[in-house]
Length: 198
Image (cartoon, rainbow, N blue to C red; front, top):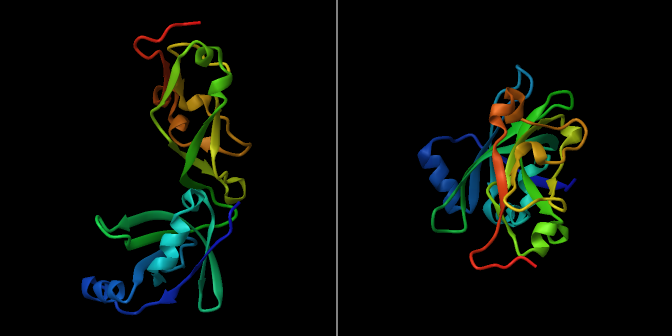
């Protein structure tokens, strides 16, 4: 698991005017919420350039993060991120506190592997990705940075579903808890027009 530390600054001023001032100073307004019932939301700010640098690593979004504030560290996951539409700047970030004994719901990347080993690939078929992230449910200790789908045995015209994702122990796909009707497609095998089977 990647080790991301966010050095935060507490902030008292809130509202649109205060947020604009922070952004002019190169800071990102953010909030940390959740956890036990007696924990109030905490308004913080982060250095924009430092946050942007961490966001370059895609595993940031599927990792347990550490918010360091006033000598105290809090474990969180990112729940929402608002980016500037034209500039390399973050407008606002929301972080949710986590507890070791409480399951979290979070999006993680899907990795499709071994298609080149499949008979379909050797017969000039291609694989089209329809979903590259999936929402999972697990305890923090079981959080994977990525989940995988092994394509080595796919057949021509086969459709892959959420249920084809390989999940580590203790991890489940949120939508599949509702039943088979929610087993959405995540990719499919197809033959390009004009391709000839070998």
